[in-house]
Amino acid sequence: MAFSYTCLGGATLRTLKFSSCSSILRPSLPLLSPPAKTLTLHSLHHLTKTHKFPPFLTRAVSVPAGQTLDKEETAKPYQWKATIDFKWIRDNKDAVASNIKTRNSVADLDLVLDLYERSLNLQKEVQRLRGERNVVANKMKGKLEPSERQELIEEGKILKEGLLTLEENLLKLTEKLQKEAQCIPNMAHPDVPIGGEDCCGLRKTVGSPRQFDFPVKDHVQLGKELDLFDFVAASEVSGSKFYYLKNEAVMLEMGLTNWAIAETMKRGFTPLTTPEIVRSSLVEKCGFQPRGSNTQVYSIEDSDQCLIGTAEIPVGGIHMDSILADSQLPLKYVAYSHCFRTEAGAAGSATRGLYRVHQFSKVEMFILCRPEDSDSFHQELIEIEEDLFSSLGLHFKTLDMATGDLGAPAYRKFDVEAWMPGLGRYGEISSASNCTDYQSRRLGIRFRPSTEQTSSNSKKGKANVGTTQFVHTLNATACAVPRMIVCLLENFQQEDGSVVIPESLRPFMGGLDQIRPKGQ
Image 1 (spheres, rainbow, N blue to C red):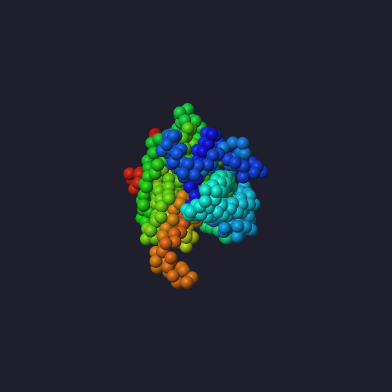
Image 2 (image 1 turned 90 degrees about the vertical axis):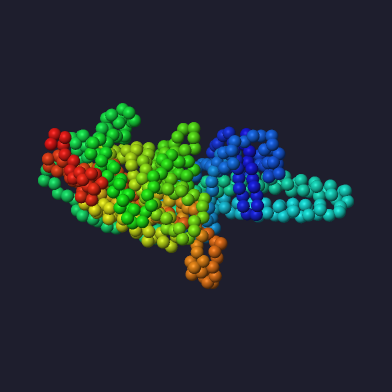
């Protein structure tokens, strides 16, 4: 059994639904069949007198993008709705379709546009019936013969029943439209290379691979000889892809963390530590999928919460559902957190040692800014990353990632891949993404432009102070600790088995300049 509460006002539709089951609706099934019982505000008043509902049901509940409803069963309703610009999508259909194709997305654009047109038509019909009902209500205010009044009463009942049916059909249609539209990825920057991994563009190369005149060891062997890790005990305690850090490796993690935070603070970033458990809906709003066989997200059983895979998620939630003053922008945060990833589907040599693990520490930069500034801040973020890794003496290359390697929120993404001599290849150590308004439309983060800005931007030269805009969001990794440890151990190993600490890190490690075998 399921109920839904529909609050209607003009073009606004707010919904509260709760049910005991959820299911899948095949797109071929009709959307205009009668759904669960819908309550008007008037009948809701009576219902709340006879049924006691828990307080958390005052918020709506959601279905992940891609799921659908079955004709015979009730739908699991939405917790949130993205403010998607459907008109823009319709008016730019060819560009959106091309973007979906080049990004290997499963989004069904034709279905989204069909649902959008049907919802517009249904909204018009709802408005028409409301108008007729208002006409009837106004007529009944005057003096009428009993027979005339009775006719109007009957007509009002018919209109009310018809309106309820249309409202509940509009509700189902709107929810289906949201689920399908949320699958559409962000548009890609015009300069993003089209294709897969092999098509990525080279932005910059820093340094060259170090030449060794002795046999090179990988970080796993170095860690064993220097007594820095314990993978065996961790696998017994927690399972595969977990680890203990020991001795100088602990100092290295703390030193890298403090170094990354200190360096980014010099550049105007506000430091944060974040919650590491968040609501599943927040994960969805940031563009990640917390459910499914290939999810990278650890969900907490019997709850609506998840472990974070990056601090980008809780930092993005700080200003959720808020309107910022123009003077507050840009907001620049650097956040330290532990991160948790399932690494579903990961296999091969890339999983060896610390390179791909289930839990790790990371320092993440996050920016909220005006739309016209996001390209320049994206350049700033990648330059900060390049400066940080250059100061450590690492050899790396910066890649402009191709469309096939962009996550759904990213408008453009740069990856930094560092040379790891022990592994004999380049490995990703960082990325920087401009997500434009993809996340802010889901998180509900807007700003109100100042009078001066709206005046200069207005074609007519008139300020529109009341109009808000969605901010743009960007994120970049200052330091993913385990992979940085891999780079440092493998690149700065010495013939005698020791490892030299880069000079820029030494102040953050109590002056330690070298990790030596315990016998030395």
